Image 1: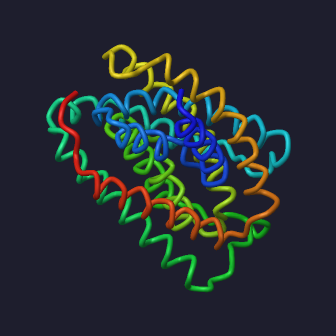
Image 2: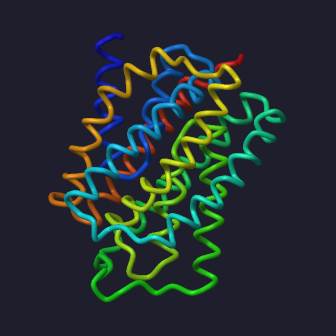
Length: 260
């Protein structure tokens, strides 16, 4: 395992814990840039995600258990199972080049939305005032779960890129910190299901994934602590957006890598 990949694993863990994105957004593109095909890179990345998310969740339970609710992760999980099944069907139909540009579009869209919110100088939601939840908002949460499941299969990411913005923008009173915590909690079973399918299909490098997990998981714990005790709502959103744009730029310059 090269020094560069070790650094990637540390960054993936930190970003996962801080932003609730699972780490696949760092690991997958980094493996692509290292020469892996998109399918092989995403398959390896998705195996890492449930273990890193679990480490983050356990840390959160110890230091910030107030961030957890039950209903929202259950809806994300239910939608995620549907999304994983749909993602398997889509995976068989889409060529690597199409998947590459869909991923780029997803990254850029999420980045622009987060930049707009972080620079608007709107005060962070007051969680103590309670969440505003109705059937429409819960439907949005379930749909975010479906999209998260699809993204886990197609792009080797935990779905936080979809779930975190959806929770922040769809549910009044939801802070970025709380949305990240709930995203990581729902990510454990959703990404776990996608990981099992990737292993069954032979798309994952299990030896490499194991090495990444042992570096990535402890770094994710540090990321959780930073999110809860050091960084503001707007700072987290801006960090998220800058990171997404960086990944998009690197992938755009590299171009799609053909093959499976």
